[in-house]
Length: 203
Image 1 (cartoon, rainbow, N blue to C red):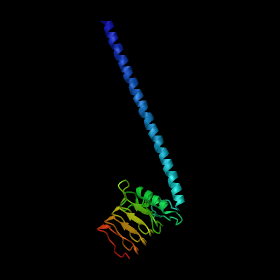
Image 2: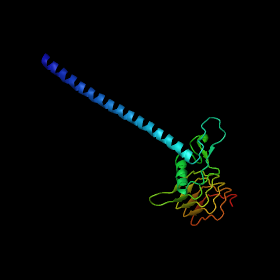
Image 3: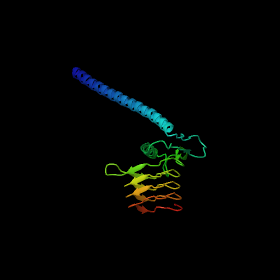
Image 4: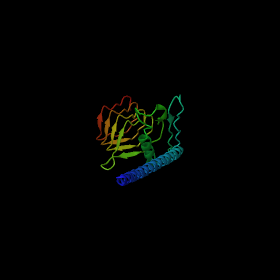
């Protein structure tokens, strides 16, 4: 009887030991995965910071002032020597980063002003593969002459006080969007649909 009891105890101890080793292995694997994710996140932050620094330097963008109590956002001065493709990528980057959002969830001090920013000649065209959709886009005060928005959907956006000489909106939906005091000389809105779009003071 004692021999059987000893065998049972030994088997149970071995089973517990195996379970403990498996648990230790799982814990070690989880720890390695967490460490790897942490390292990847740090690397992404370093790459993002470097990219932002290069971007600000290339486009002469003043970095947003995060100091508490600053009275305004910073301005962008996009050089007129930069090509329309680069301007488009810059605008998309700022938009996707929510730095030029109306009603942004980011603190006001982190947002950018586009007053007098040169985005002339930018071209957006939607398709089945590539959607052209903007919601809460804030371009107040920028230059968008000879710009094109084709097959796009634009909602709750601010195009007020822009210079949009010969701008083209073709087969585009404009919903709850403002063009207050915007210069629209020779602008073309062919086949564009409007819903609660405001042109107060536009010329």
